[in-house]
Image 1 (cartoon, rainbow, N blue to C red):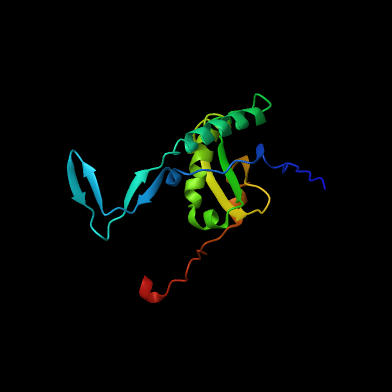
Image 2 (cartoon, rainbow, N blue to C red):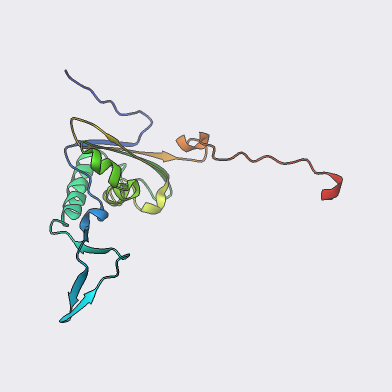
Length: 179
């Protein structure tokens, strides 16, 4: 079976990258279960209710992923319209799929976004400050880890986020007591 992806015509930038697990900075460290640590020749006890973390041996995966993603993003840019000028605001949509159910439930969605936004910065848009709206989602996909990115230039009138309403504001009629 063949699958064809077509870029949403409202997007100014689109990329689909299949294969890499999106690492996060939280992947750099793991909890150390020892109840002591050694520093400057002394042995120190760790209080029971304190978590102690150590840097993982493979913590360079975040930097390697960011470098790979930056290269993939640069390959996806085909014209001189990038990076998007600083006077333009953008919204970024990031969707990460993963095969590992445990990872889905333990990785923080905001940490998934950080490395991706770093790779877009300076390539798709000039500066992170241009990002006015950010949507990050994660889901299980049984076949492959993947990363789907979309970026679009926005104005106050055309943001996809305009229709999201968290609260409704309405002016109450004043009574004589209010005056």
